[in-house]
Structures are given as C-alpha cells and as structure tokens.
Length: 162
Length: 358
Image 1 (cartoon, each protein chain N blue to C red):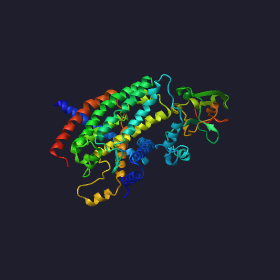
Image 2 (image 1 turned 30 degrees about the vertical axis):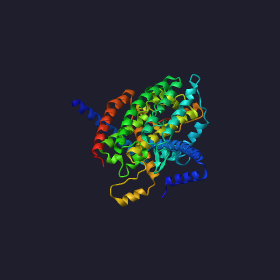
Image 3 (image 1 turned 90 degrees about the vertical axis):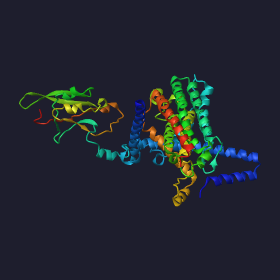
C-alpha cells in the first residue's frame, strides 16, 4: 500500500514541479515586453553610454585632476595583485626640493588585451589612483593600440599623496 | 459565410462536368498533391518562425528582428540558403540509403495528412480507419530515422538513431492507448465520425477524468514521438552533435527539419481532432445565441486555432523543461505512462459502457 502511495505522490510532485516551471516561462512569454533583457546595441548606443549599471567594468583608467596630477605613488600593489600580468609599472626617481630622491612612476603600462576586468587592481590600490571606466567599445585594427600608458605625459603625483 | 466545403464542391462538380471521370480524378489528385506540398512548405516557414519567437520570448530575448519587417523574413532567407547549399554525401556512407532516408521521413509526414479533417467537409481521404491509419503510418518514420543513422556510417548518428528507435517504439504504445480512449468514447475510428460525435461538447470536457488523463498522456507521448525537447535524445546536441542528421547538409537536412515541424503539426492536429473537437465550434449546452455566434467563426479557423494552440503548448514544453536521460525517458514510459494509460483505458471503457459521459 505504501508503494502505491509513494508512486502516486511521485507522479503528483513531478507534475507540480513541471507546472511551476511552465508558469514561469508562461509569464515571461506573456510579459515579454517588460522581461526581455536584450540590448539592441548599435541602435541604442547613446542610451547605453548614458546609463550603464554602476558595477559595469569597461577598462582601467587613471584619474587626473585639472593640474594634470594623479594619485599614483608607484607602489606596484596593482601590479602584484593582477592575476595575469596586465599591469606593468616603470618607476623612476624624482628629486624633491630638499634634495632627496623620491620614487615616482615613469609609465603605468596597461595591457587591455590581457585584462579580464576582475577589479583586483582597483581594490589593491591604496590611494584610489586607478578606477574602472564604463567605456566598452575597445575594438581596434592594430593590437598594439591596446597597450596603453595610463599616466598622461608630463603628469606628476599630487602633493600629499604618500 | 466562408466555407472551404463550397469551394471543393464547386471544383469537383466543374471537373466532373467537363472531363471524363478518370481524368477528373487525376486532376483532383494533382490538386491535392500541390495543396499538400504547399501546406508542407508554408507550415515549415510559419512554424519555424513561431518556434523562434516563442523561444526568444520565453528566454527573455527578442528573437529574429533584422531580416524584413520585425524579422519575419528570417525563415525565408534561411530556406533560400539551404536550397543553394551543397547536399554532401560522405565517402563512407551507404549512398543509396543515405539519400533515401530524408524522403522517407518526409513522405511519411505527408501521408499522415490524408485522413486529417482541416475544416467541415474538407478532407483528403475519409477512410473508415482514419485514426488507426495515422498511428500505423506515423511509426514508419522511425525507419527513415534509423536508415539515416545507419547509412551515415558515423557512431553519433547511429547512437542517435538507436535512441530514437527505442523512444518512438515505446512512446507509440501510450500514444496509441490514449487515442484508444477517445475511440472507446466515440465508438468509431473514422475521423469524420469522431468529429461529429463532439457536436455537443468536446471529449476533453465531456469525458470526465479519463479524457483529461489521456489528453495529458497523449501530449507527452507525441512530444516524445516527434523527437522534441525534453525528449530530443535522438539529436542531443551536447552529446551527439546532431544525432541522426549529423552528416546531412543542404536540402536533405532541410527535409528532416521540415518533416519534424510538419510532424508536430500533424500530431497536434490529431490531438485537436480527438480531444478538442477538430473543426467543431465551441458549444455550451442550451445557450443558443452563444452557440450561433460561435458557428459564425469558420470551421477552418477553429481547426487551425486549436492545432496552433497545441503546437504552442508543445513549444512551451521545449523551452521550459531540461532534457531527460535515456534511462529516465524509458522509466517514464514503462513505469508511469503505460500503466496509467492502461488503467485509464479501463476506466474510460467502464464510463462508456455505463453511458456516464455527457
């Protein structure tokens, strides 16, 4: 007797779970105008530039202020944090007014073609010098164009950033 | 009121008045052949479009939207591409069987159309064993599939074909028993009589629980018989590349593809005829005015509306359920569907003998 009860409850619970799934897809079908998540990319290009989600990660950039100053001290924490060698920092030594040597960045080299947008470098940066931009149109005709130097020419580290 | 019956009668009387009977019959055959072939191709285009739309909307996508207005010419473009593509025959294949298989599959799905009643008095062949004819002929398509799998000389094709064989042979049992339930209720195998017997209500509504159970079993079994997801083990892209039609390309592949969709149409038409009253309008007991309004909708619209509703349900299955394993598939048939449908047939027989249905 318990065998038959088990058999029937198997059938009923199976049917019920199938109907739950069908209710979900049926709802998607009827409300397809609201639920569809496809972006019609080339058509709504302007819209996408205006309103991507905050967490969207396009590429690593270094923010510069009006005086062409950035916050990168050349500590290489991002280079160490990067899992696939995307970042290469070339350092140099500046002379401070007191005549001391001070470490600073010469080139912040960023290989966009290697980057997986994992965000680990941004989290490792102690001075918040780099951040993720939302630019996503990265296709180029020459692969070398994807190797970027993030610090602008002539820029220097901001006063007071250690 | 629009009626296909008047048109066919007009054509038939004109032919018999102007030609001698033999030639009139030959001309009629030709007309029927042309109609079936054009229905075949139109159904292919329409159903593939419908499938892609339904799939997209259920998966939160848009579906085809580039070719033509709102993407409606997409299937036409696909068909043109398949027509101009080369139909390759692999070197190691059994060439005769390899080239024969798609035609067998296609011819079978065309032949099943013969006893279908598309509208009031619009039927190719009102044979007195119509339902039996459909079940008998539809099992031949498995030979085409096995032929394709074997002749391809490819292990994936052969595995797909074997699975398809096991699947179709087992599911035909419960499909047949589900059909028998309605045959028991209506007391006839002739399609026109079965439709006539539903003039005062469809069997799904007036056959109590057994009709509902057999309807559900029928839908499950025909989904399996047409090799559609969640029972698409014969193709199983992730395991067998494309199953029995891995080696096919161009128009030969298109024939398999078209035959699959026409088979869906045919089985849904059979389901609509048996359970939803075929071309019979929806009538409620004594509501005369309501019934008259329903009568004004042409019978062909009723038939195609019901059929396309069932096709939609089967597409709904495909885009909701994950694929079964082969042992789960056979378990479902032999441990669940077959005992339930046998018991159900017994119940239906008792109800029919006691005259308990409406």
